[in-house]
Amino acid sequence: MLQPTIELRRDLTRLIRQFRPEVVITGDPTVRFSGNYINHPDHRVTADVAIDAVFPSAGTRLIFPELLDQGYPPHNVKYLYIHGSQKDTPL
Image (cartoon, rainbow, N blue to C red; front, side, top):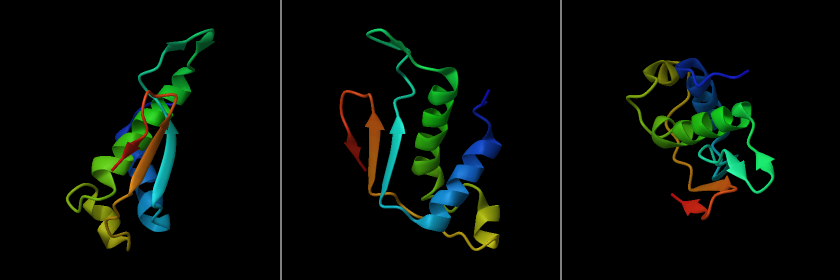
């Protein structure tokens, strides 16, 4: 029963800044129905927050400045792949 909170986005942003991935893969938060599949609300929230953590949060110094104080400088993810979308999106 996830909620798209600012705290969850900060936690994911911290992980991105800590591990500094070149690629992030997540689901498509806009998909509710696909054929016979109904996208679970937790999956939509996770995808939505992950995308917001990748951009703009992970690469922007002014977003979550407390992470700078904790030793997590900004990091720009190079590729964001959105599973279930019409197109993968290079950043």
